[in-house]
Amino acid sequence: MSKRILLVEDESLIRLDISSILQDNGYDVVGEASDGEKAVELAFSLQPDLIIMDIKMPKLDGLKAGKIISSKIDTPIILVTAYSQKEFVEKSKQANVVGYLVKPVSETNLLPAVEVALSQAAKMKAMQEAVAEANEKVEKRKLVEKAKGLLMDKQSISEEEAYQKIRKFSMKHQLSMDQTAAKVIAKYNKDK
Image 1 (cartoon, one colour):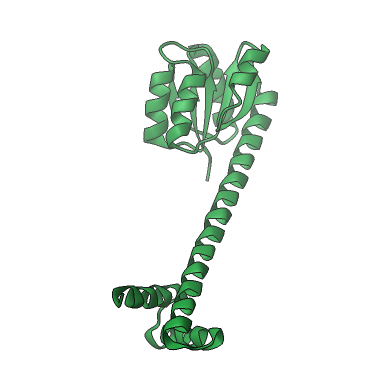
Image 2 (image 1 turned 180 degrees about the vertical axis):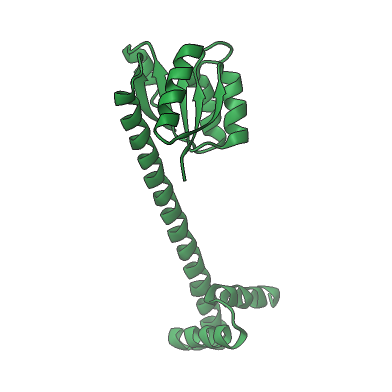
């Protein structure tokens, strides 16, 4: 599946050149804008895989547009500019900015930047999913531990016996351990 790219550049000839390079190399340019306000609107509606955006634009510059976009969606951004001054580089070090290209943009510097940006975004997404999954497992484990503690306290049984009760109930009623633990906790909280 080709990657969907939003292209934001106020100079139409440059936008056309970049769009042609991308399309000739199998990328899908799903939207084009010539100012930051339109970039924000299109980013939210199109949810592209990558945004390539000029810094200096009318209405809303690329840095501000990038900040607005990054506050709502997690799309990587490559900034393009005619300026390589340190101040722009420093300002571009925001959340989702993953690359910085200085004009004139050519196929030889654009394509590697796009590939690296998409690769880094995929790695970041995988890491975020792994962290979320690990956090969910910890929360489920906490529920089971709390339920075991309640059973041990209320029924004067060992930790192993409490665990086996939860496990047996889970299997009998085809529930996960954390669902059973939630039922145990609810039962004893209701009895208070």
